[in-house]
Length: 443
Image 1 (cartoon, one colour):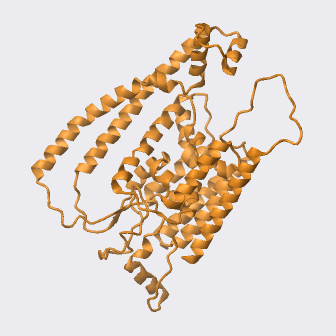
Image 2 (cartoon, rainbow, N blue to C red):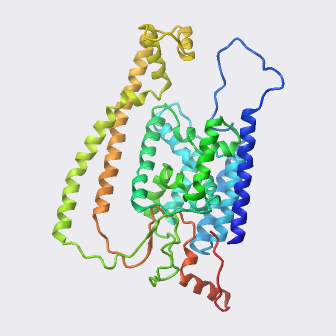
Image 3 (cartoon, rainbow, N blue to C red):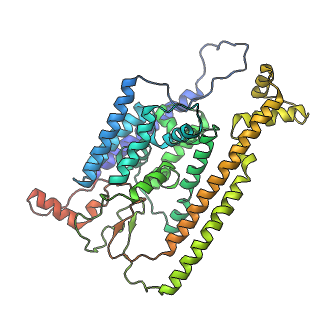
């Protein structure tokens, strides 16, 4: 435990030095004046590094598959938290700092969404692999990608020193945010408006050691929060985690707390900092079947109503949401300028006027985009309505539970809970062939 603590402190100090270096760059002054050109164009900040050689793309895919396989092996077969920890250190160094967080499986769902709805969008093979491979492993072995391969999760994991327990009710409320984030990310990607996951990634500025001062503070805040709240981004924001959770809930060979059977010793109750352990339901008074059936029937009747009402509500936000698209923003600016309602012009409106395009064509294009948002709003609202209806139905079903069990949807397969089980100690002693001694737990 002491060795692990020293490693985490060292990594936190190293991260602070990186952030300090970036901040010093942002405040640095030029030694010589920069040349001035007769242009208003400013080079935009890119959310992804430049393309690399084909070899690196294939190598990244191979390395991703290898690390997923190793993590699954060490979690399910060897049940080794120490191995998972060191794999996460390697993943953080390579996929995080060396590859600068790109290609990222979390952001890849935007690329896939855009490729499905935008004919001109080309999807690289590397992005496809980074999107599919973690989901495939989650379907068979649980969220082993989250355990030690995802650089975003690894970054939060290594700085987690004094995690506090988030109340269950608060965790349930915050658990809605990833579904909202997923829905809006897909909507903006499919309409060609923005890749908001990459734009608001809290760790990309640390991985790339560059960004504006406000974004650096945003990233530093998330790192600081991760010291006391276990994986806040993974649990309460990550949209890709929603898909991983769906796949993991169907996995047959998921990690379990005990290697064989549960003795209900209660030692594992506080071992999970992520709240992914279900307690036994012993002692509960069974509910009358007639009452339970009546409540479920009511919820099933209300589910279509919730889906339709939610779809209608979000679809009516089409004008507001469409302003995320640059064409719509330009059309609104040009319209205000023509009506004399604004005195200042923008770079986009001036560029449009210099192109000599008719304003009617711009307005028609903006209206077509708003129609896409109206249609997409129905799907997004329907998805959110279905989510809330399903959540209510799930909460209303009281499933009896006699043992301590892992919540396969939210479990990160981090292997922390293994060493809290006395049966695990017995298993290790059987392998060692020695007397039972305390086994160090890597946190």
